[in-house]
Length: 434
Image 1 (cartoon, rainbow, N blue to C red):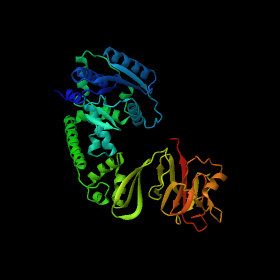
Image 2 (cartoon, rainbow, N blue to C red):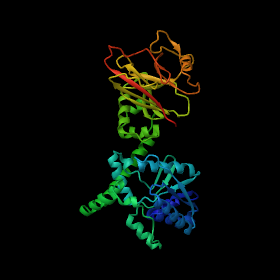
Image 3 (spheres, rainbow, N blue to C red):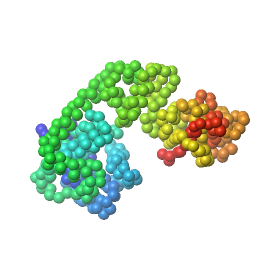
Image 4 (spheres, one colour):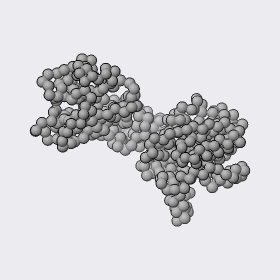
């Protein structure tokens, strides 16, 4: 039993969906899946994503892909995708496809991709340029999972030349050719069209050497992942984290947060676990996730953008000048002037303002000392005076019981900028539509 058959045998009884561009790679993957379908009783579908990035060429490829699938007697579906972020085109298109797969796929299903040995080497260099560890460098695997989707790659042991020979042996002489693949604008195309041909010319043994390195990296990454998976101890204990190697911590962070952590996040965690404190400390991870530490405990909290504001979300504005909490975005910057900028910004004396603030929901009956006033007022009354709807959720920025700012409503008299102020910090608040 060869590599590809062994792979398909693991998905007996599944529903398999082939990402089918109509190019040589996806055509070969679909042919192989069709070849073993009867043996392993899985349902097979072809799915084409039309990103509409190349006008008539994109539409023509979609029509040709539909015809090829029909001739192979395979159910076909074309999904139109709109890419809004043209600056980061590749990653935006990839995320759009993942989002589409998540909507389409039923339980007990997997996606077939046409990635092959040449793609795997290109991926190695791309990930190397991004600073990936052994898991990231060897991430293009026969079976992998991304955002709950299982991807299988039956062509990983075939080169591009092998694939074309396989197609011709199966009486397929034509396939779609993406014109954008011929240039060097994208990093992957640069490696494919410029770097690797020159490398093979100068150092013929390098290609096989990279394959051996990839296999070694995959073996090492699997060992570390298995070690972390079976590691005994309380993973919410700071003392447990102190005892671990950084190679273990980076994988624990991925397990804990559900995101791929970078070195900066690891460094922040290493700094915070050096000491134990009863004070609640926070390390932002992304827009909806933060790591919290208190006493000997470390845990993750997640906040959804459509839920109420958390009771306490700590902001160390000097260390983290940009903070996202779901749909709320805060920035802090040192400035020289205090020119008026509207109700979504506020100025404070940086020397008088606590370096750690708490952001959370406005508490019932909570008061603040508005800027220019000599007595406290209820925030609810200030909201009414500004004619801000009661159903609009707005956060309060406070320290202990002192409210420094309620964006859109008012900023306070506390830590105000005066002639004696040496350093001024400007806080800005924005809301996204998510």
